[in-house]
Length: 114
Length: 116
Image (cartoon, rainbow over all chains, first blue to last red; front, side, top):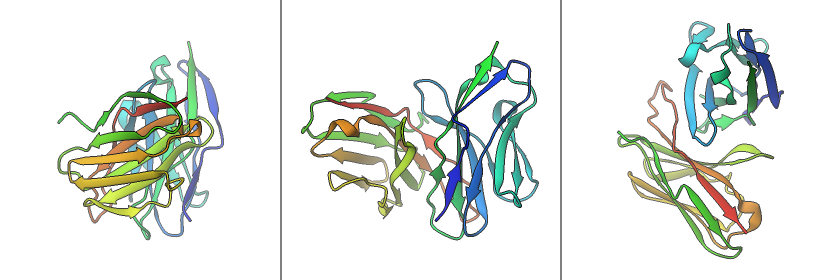
């Protein structure tokens, strides 16, 4: 069965420093991978996705993610963190060989310290 | 488009009462998902519909939970009877899934359910 893991419940980063939010996945076939962000008291918003092609995917708000097939990872990155990036981040996966179900990780809370 | 619309935003009820959560997906989207978010379990998929047909309800926790999608513009998630452990934020999301997998979910603002 497909699954996605976010090993860190919380990540703290100083403003201006690079940030990484980790995600690993497990699917039987090729994955579609996604990152979503949830700001306080709001629904989730799409950040970026990987379907095929370039392993480095660029998304909204300056975020990017790198698909690594050998490590089955899809870590979210940003070169320089902003305080406004503080939110809850979810990694998600869909197995293209199976149904259209999208499975989410438990989420990682990102704190950007001023 | 106003996006995915959920109602109510907040629901407080007593144990044993029936709770109905409502969702209006984005017009033209062919898939609708119900998720539940808790601190302990994160974001769980409860059920999803494709073209108004339930495809996978394996995430529905118990028979107390039921979901319907009578038409392309409306879905309900019902809990009867409700229990305190059902307290969570329930999200509805819709998407337009094409054959190439080019899709993304659009989420509603969620319904904060508190069962006392």
